[in-house]
Image 1: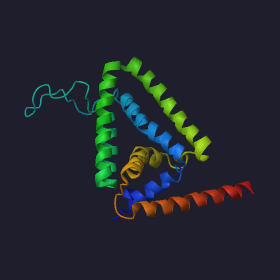
Image 2: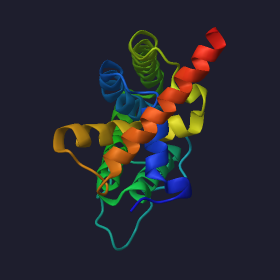
Image 3: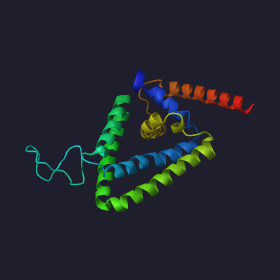
Image 4: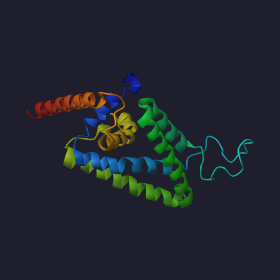
Length: 204
């Protein structure tokens, strides 16, 4: 069964899906959303640590942790996303959570290797490229402004999970629970129809 309130997956998915119904736009977001998340973590690597992993922990072997793995705001950022996705759906959310942690580990290693002076340039280039691709997807193919212009927090928070769930649905026909896909498609169709009617009224 679906959940309500903050963890209402149908509501979140329908909101985001109403802005991403064109197949090309969906493909562009599938390609660019996770790199945006990853490169954001690269930049967050240079924030102050909230806990130092280099401190000696008696019950863990020495050298277990890489010096690149710092429990900073990047880690908190990844954990917040991971926990939220697991609350939305146990199976797909767990996979998304693993991807979030994997991104934090990979981004930390990359940032540690590059150093700040080079890392921020790489992040800037990647962010500009990925955002441009997504805005082109909306402008040329979707012909609708991005979801972030209407609800910034929800759009940024749901983006990575949305594209992962889209892939799982298309490739494996995955559903968080029976009837999810039909219910969401119905809500998306209703939201798109409402948006088209409002757009038509403005034109007329």
